[in-house]
Image 1 (tube, rainbow, N blue to C red):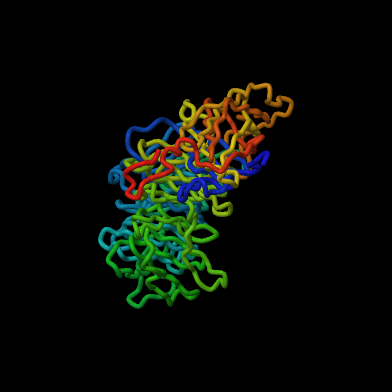
Image 2 (cartoon, helix red, strand yellow):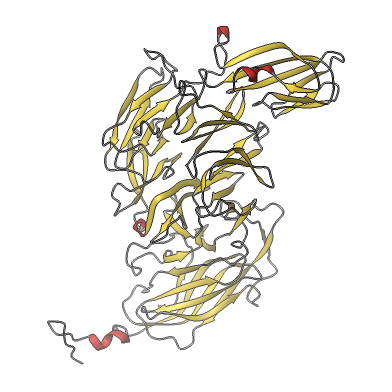
Length: 622
């Protein structure tokens, strides 16, 4: 045997079995190194969004969308729902229950682009063109308080304080009015306006109403102001105006009396916040299904690949399947051996529902509910059996998706808040461990945002190369390599290849036969073995399949270095550890153990004094 190579890193962390047995392309343990595109790469840092928050946590987060595709960043902290105006977090709703979790759901219709918030205190409706205003939609005769999402024009709600095991559905929004003005949409024509600003009359008759499709004509000039559906009005003679769809307030840059034509809706009337139904329920109306078996509460509800709603409880799950006519439904226990620990511990993906199964709390498993090979049934399948999920606590965990990854934020042993994010790549079968305090996730434009588990702060995650100005705490340990033989060996040199930023460096350590890591060399971004003639420009966000950078880019350079090992011992196995030292990019794509020499078939020297042990194990024949 002369050389041994790792030509590609593909396996992530394998920490459930002996490090001697795991693949050489895997790590026995690591922190803040990710396996991506055949390399191991120091993970990116995080960048604060707005100001640092006080001690607390984020209790909900999402991005809403405007008609032009731009976004509104929403979050729930403490007693407030806020939006980010590009500089500062602004209050929209106040007086909510402290730290109560809220779910957000986006919904677009002919009436506009909305974000809804559902929680213990009620239902709140926001038009993303006017994020500073809201409608409080709770009406005990029409709807409920709980967690919810909107799917196919209907709200699915659970976690009512009064009914922890009930699953509820709203009317299906038909996005049209009906005769007599009793539908969701109502038209208004020729409403008098008296000046260049005012409030449309619809709001005075219903606090849960919002308007859309506004046209205002100034009588004197005949100028017509037309709704752009983004909160602005454009006059056909060049003047402009604004419209707040929630409050009905308008402004024009031309004065004078006029008339307004518009429509208004009230989603509490046959819309997505109306859960009412007839004595004999009709198609498209609200519904309620009991899911009482076991008595445990519904914790989370997700949509399966078959379009059914899967209610995940602590120790079991239900499946609710609605037929195409919306008049027949199947509501049944799906499984009794699966369960989840928290509201956000499951996520619907194109491949199935992925969740942390804690029905056996001593053996948590990442599981996916996916179609079987014949495609006629949904079955649970355990993912990543090589990873020791039992090292972590999942009582407040969040499971979400980002690029190729399933994200799992959870707690290390003894932690009181989530302090780890596991990056799980189903296609590659790899899990990597990153250390960030996260409780919620939201995505937009290829970027990932995390809500902190310890402060009322939001971060652009895996962005930049520092952790709030500090270098990123990290290490990567290879397997315990035997080089396919139990004989003693010696290594003369190791070779390393990858890319590195000029200001970065990493230390290299070797551990022979569990004797502890010894520093054997340092790779410098400024070293003579770095090829500065071939720079590669990268951006701040490089965790995904493409490198996203914008204007803030940095150059990295390829390197190939050989480290000569001073007085290496004879060993049975060895592992290597890499530790990045500075702020900046670094990856490792290739490792070679060079000039491996094989010796006698003996056990390592430190164990030899115990070769001949008595039958009772109490004495040793020296």
